[in-house]
Length: 312
Image: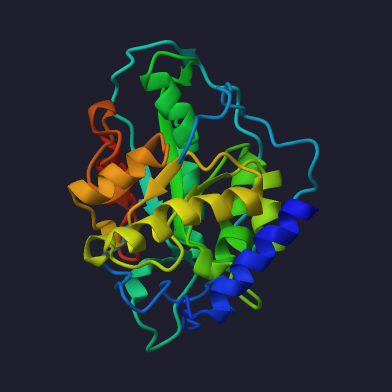
């Protein structure tokens, strides 16, 4: 409880200090808030920590400790995936890391409508992945496998959700929970504040649902424009607050707007993160642990193009 109060006070202090505000985009349609912070355009951000948590074998079963989150309307029925075939290699395999922002339908005139993926499209994409033998894993599991520990499903995929929107809870989490898959939330702490789009209880709910929580800074600033003190605040302090808030190791970092340089990477490494994700398009490779590529899933992506993006 004390840790939670410290974290809550820290988040509240950031809000009072003017950490930035998100404009509301689509609260009613499983949407959420606009991009976190005025300094960085979210269209440049793709949906991108410290000692690794214990290596866990990916599960295909929903957590028995948590009641099912209600499904959004009209997505059909989802059932637990069959237990995947686990493999011990090859260790250097390329893996798709998918990048999402908001799941829902943007209202007319909202900024950055391309950040949205419709609920129906998201559901179809998850069904495609399951039908074609993919199994969702966390970035921590992926990094451990690349480093020689544990096993992975024969066809792993990581599902990352950038910034922190209510649709992560309302749409993505209930679908993934029924399949038995984890999501990865790249959480910008500006989203977690009084009356924020993804308030603390929902972040805790995602943790209970098996999601990995990773760091996306305090305010979504372009880190390449900051001085040393600013980089420390947005990377090192952000991680400390997020760990206190969630009780998670917060092992990965996500560069806001995909912007990074040698100085930024150096701070991320020094902070103890295991790796970091970018907006670079493509499959993720173990040799690029601090500049991991991802596949941006956008509003106009057909299922055929979605499938093509997954191919090595």
